[in-house]
Each structure stands twice: as C-alpha cells, then as structure tokens.
Image (tube, rainbow over all chains, first blue to last red):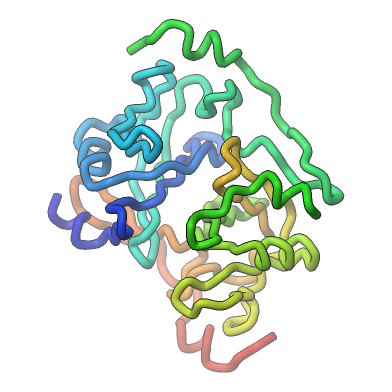
Length: 130
Length: 130
C-alpha cells in the first residue's frame, strides 16, 4: 500500500478531494474529502470512507444513513491531487434524499432544481442503520 | 448573476473545486478550481475558464493547447461548495494527451495505467492554438 501514498498529494490539511461516480450510470454523485486513513480504509474494506471536515473525523457513508458506497474502482489524476471513486451506491448519495448532490443547475441565469428527493431526510436519518 | 454568487461557497483562497464531465459519455475528465471571475466568465461565454493555482491567474482551457471545453450545463452541489460542469470537450482534457486526467487505477494494490495518450504533449503544446 506504500505505492498509493507515494503517488497521492494531500493538501496542507492532509486531505485530497474525492469524486464519487456511480459506475453503472456514470452519474457524478458527490465530492467529499479523504485523508490517508480514509484512503487506506477504503482500499482495505472496499467500502468508501471519507474524512468529514465539519466533524473532523472519518466518515463512513453507511454509519448515519445506511446509504453505503461499494468501491468498484479507485482512480487518481495525473497530478495525484484528486481521487475518482467508481462506486455502487445503495440508495441515495445526498443528505437531502436525492441520488446526486448536484441537483441544482444554472439555466437562463437562474438556479433550477433538476432532481427531486427519492426519500425524505427524516426517513434517511430517522433510525441509525448499519 | 447575483444568484449564483449567493449560492456558491468559495474557500479561504476564494476558490471552489470544479469537476468537468463529458456530457456525451459521462466520463469524468478532470478537476480544477474556479474563482468568482472564472465562474462569471464561464457562464457569460459558454467556454470553460478555471483559475490556475500554480500560475495564479485565469486559465482558459483553449489558450495553450486548443483543447476547448464548451459548457453544456453548470451545476453545483447541495452545500454550494463544489461545481459540476457538463462539457463538450474538444480533443483531450489531460496535459499528458489522454482524454481524461483519471488514467491511473489501483488494481490488486498496484497503480495501473488504464488509458493511453491520444496525442503527444509536444503535439498538444507545440504550437499555441486558439
């Protein structure tokens, strides 16, 4: 595993941005951040683990919502400063209950919602699931 | 245009990460950064403009390589801290001559190149094109 840590360039906070893309559809689901520990855990377990900047700790997608991301392929870019995770997303990726976090578009100069929630946040976070 | 600048959350350096995705294929091409000026120019012209952190100035994809990105849809995420650009990429997105910057994958614990250059960097940058 030393390989990957020679290649990845973490920023001053020890983080690298990670894009999650649904492998089956190509849909970009979200962008979050990983530290070395999150990268190591993701590669070791095959379940995606991020680092939460707001909570300042590891963030396993399944912990609070049951919305697991199974790793299909771990890629990084030519500069080694961004990760691309191809995943199989269980349920929705977004905390608002939408499949993707990118549900707002600028059309004719106005912000427009282009996707509706598939599940309510209450239902998503009501009962902690593992 | 005041709308978008109320919604987007730029970081301490005045930047927001922007993912470029090829609209036709769904391929994630690259991640770069935008400041307010780059966002405004991209929306005004329909040609993608980033902010280069290494050169500390606006970075129009076509300037040094002719590899233009035409904006198809401008989206941002639920937190307003990441942009997703759906684009039509002319030629390749990566400075190595590959279509996407994400051409390295970790497979069986080893870094593997999964895409070959379509054009040499010399050919790409040999003669400045507009």
